[in-house]
Image 1: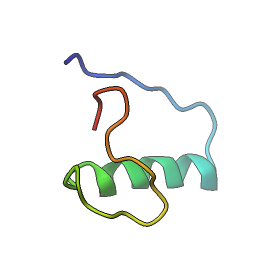
Image 2 (image 1 turned 90 degrees about the vertical axis):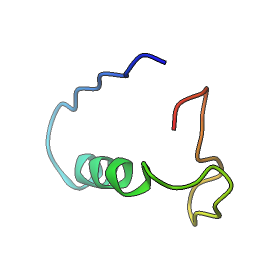
Image 3 (image 1 turned 180 degrees about the horizontal axis):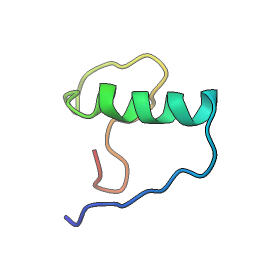
Image 4 (image 1 turned 180 degrees about the vertical axis):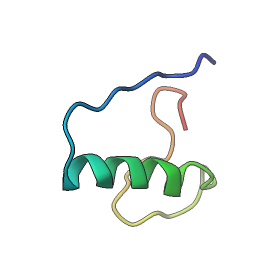
Length: 46
């Protein structure tokens, strides 16, 4: 599956939380219960 390239315009708490969340949850198992996330895989991307 190809990598997704994302650019974040602006800085602030929301952008920081998005980046931190992506790095924190990237290695979570597909069947793991993660508070705040309904699905750990979306459209084939994890």
